[in-house]
Structures are given as structure tokens and as C-alpha cells.
View 1 (cartoon, rainbow, N blue to C red):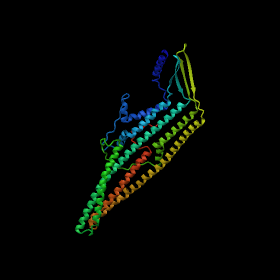
View 2: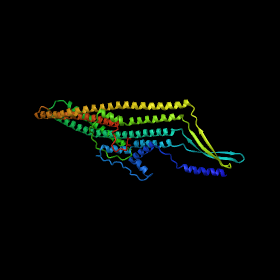
View 3: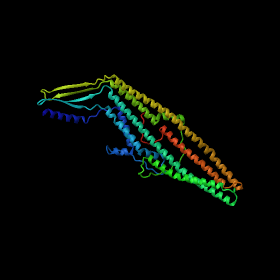
View 4: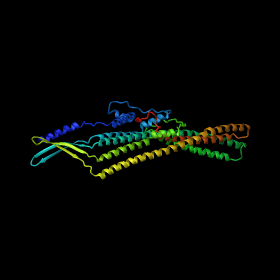
Amino acid sequence: MRGPLLFFTVSAAVIAFFAGCTAAPFSGEAAARNAVTQVGDKLPLIAQSRASTRSPVSVPVLPTLHGDSPVDEFVLYAVLRHPAVAAAYFDWRASVEEITPARSLPDPQFVFQADVADTLMSFMPGLMADLMGPGKRAAMTREATSGAEVARRAYVASVLRTAAEARKAWVELAYVEEVDRLYATTIHTAEEALNLANAGYATGSGMATLEKQVQLENVIAEHHAHHAGIADRRVAARARFKSALGLTPDDPDPAWPRPTLTITPVPSAEELWRRASAANADLAKMRAMVEMAVASVEVARKASAPNFTVGAMAELKADPTFIRPLATISLPIWRDKISATIAAAEARRDAAVSRANAEQLGLAAELAQTLYMIRDADRMLGYIDETALPNFARTYATLEASVQSGTTSPAMISETRLMEIDLRHERLELLRQRETAAVDLSLLVADVAPSNSPLPRESP
């Protein structure tokens, strides 16, 4: 029994020794871990869960929202709380953790051999270790590090998309509030015009028909219907805004903002293209995928290098005890399999390059289309603000003079106001479309999230 007892004693000692072993990290792994840790410390829910597992850390808090809070406060709240951002963060963190298994040595193995007849004739425990061919672990580490960079870029894209959705929900909420006021003004003005038309008809100063009254009654009924529809649209807009903030329907409502639609300045086309080429999140992710595919090719090319297994066994029954060294070597002789593995990796690399080029082409087209929509809206807004609305002011002055002279009915002023309000409805819709496109444009150039958002620092 001395042999088996000694074997299990040695086994327990070796397992206890290797249980605390760690392999030396590669340089890229340390940078990736620092980046994911720094970002995690900026996310309140994640930092809170990690604070209990390590030394106390300063846990950030969500912004306190008020009705007059700026849009960036609401956007920051959405980014810090939204589960889509948290999911992308954990995917990134998992990819960083996968670097360690990729660069670690294979687990050593205990082996033993025994010869048994009427009794135990020999008992030979041993320890075996697998050794990879030269450069394989380094190549696998670079592949895993590139995969972590892809996940990091996906996290950045998730933050930007969340911020963009919050801004679009803000624009929709602002539109609903302003168009609600316009519809109320339209109804009030149409009712005023109807009263004047009825008074003119009753006194005989107007035309002896009810055509104008019927027309105004139709306008009032139509805008009452639109006004009622806006109430439903407000419910939908608030639900969208609440969801964009990362709040579920069961959560308490946030402080609803009091937004106002204004024109957001837009840089030149050249500046936009420069920013988009350098910072577009989807394009950056495609480029990171190219780097990962290049690293995968390097791993595939190492398939032609053999792997080794080395170890030793001790004969505990013999006297004197002797050591039997062991070694194996893999024979990568199937050249067609190796060639196919390399060819597949190279094809995936070429596909990644082509996808990156296609993404760049799509980015150029989307940038041009979005910029056209904004500029076209700017032209129409310029016409309304600089020509059409000022002309209404001059028209009112003329109508007031005509009313005083008795050549025009006062109802004409109210009817003209209805025309002006219709134009303001058109302006508000143009502004909504323009600001939604401006958010899309900001997303293309990665300029949609507040400056204090939990984004990783870019490498210099």
C-alpha cells in the first residue's frame, strides 16, 4: 500500500501547488483589462455589483432628472441605465476574460501505469504536460485580444445607438408638445373666424350664403380630431421616451422634460466625412474584425508546427526507484487539411476586408443622403422664416387698414391667421424631420453621446 498512498499524497501536493499558478499576461491583455475596468467603474449598476467583491470604490450615481434638465442629462441617464449598454459591456468583459485561456498553457495531467498479477508488480505515477509549437500561444493571444477589441467597438456602438434613440425620443416629445399647442391655436382661431362669419351673415354685411361657415366648421372638426390624436401620440411618445431611458413600464415615470425644438448646427460635408471616417462606430467595428481575421490567419498558419507532450513516470515498486521520461510529438502530415485551414482563415480575412470596404461605401452614401435631407429642410425652413412668415405680418397690416376703411370683413384676418398657422404646422413637421436626421448624422460621426458618457478612451 506504500506505493498508492505515496502516489495520492504526491498528487494532492502537486494539485495544491498548481492551483495557485498563473501564467504571465501579455501586454495587450493588461491594457484590455484596464479599459474594461475603467468603463465598468463609470456604470452605476455594474460598479455597485463589483464594489462588494473588491476594495470599496466610488460608485457613480444616476443624474437627477428635472423637467428643465438639458437633453444631455436625459441622454446620459439613458446610457448609464439602459440594459442594452449593460449587455454590450458584459459581452466586452467576457471577451477580455477569454484572453487568459488563450494565452495560458494547457493543464498538466497526472498519469499512472501499473502491472498487476497476483499482486501489484509495478506502480508508476507520473506527470505530463502539453507544449505547443513555437509561436502558437502568442498567435492565439493576439486573436483573442483582437476579439476583445471587436467587443469593445460593439460596446461603443451600443452606447451611441442608445444615446441616439434617447435624442430621437426627445425630438418626438418636443414635436408633440409644440404641435399640441398649434392645434389648440388653430381651433381657437377657426372658432373666432366662424363667430365673425356668423355675425356678418346675421347682420347682412357678408355674402348671403353659409359656404364660409360650413368650411370653417369642417376645419374645426378636423382639427379637433387631430388634437385628440395628438393626445394618443403624446402617450406613445412618452412611452418611447421612458423606454429610451432604460425604464420599464412598471417603473415610476421620470420627470417629463419641457423640450423645445431648435435648429442644430451641422458642419461642412468635408468635416463630416473626416469625422465619420475616423470615428464611425460600425466602421471601427469592421476594422477591428479585419484585425481579428488577420490574427486568425496567423493562428491557422501555425497548424503546420507540431505540438509536444513531455513528462516523467516514477516506478515506486522497484528498488532502487527509477524514472521513466516520456515524450510525444504530433505529426501534422495532412498537408491538405493544413492548407484548407489556412485557406479558410484567409478567405475570412478577405471577407472581413470586403465588409469593411462595403461599410465605408455605405457610410459615404448614408452620409450624403442624410446631409441632403438636412439641407433640403434648411432651405424650406429658410423660406418659411425669412419670406413666408414675414409676408403674413405685412398682410395683417394691410388687412387691418382695409377693415378700418370698411372694405374688408374682420373675418379675413382670422382666416389669414389660419393660413399662417397651417404654415407653422408645416414648419414644425420640417423641423422634426430635420432634427431626427441631425441625430442620425451625429450617430454617423460618433458625436451623439454626452462628453461624460461611459466610453473607453481611444488608444493614441
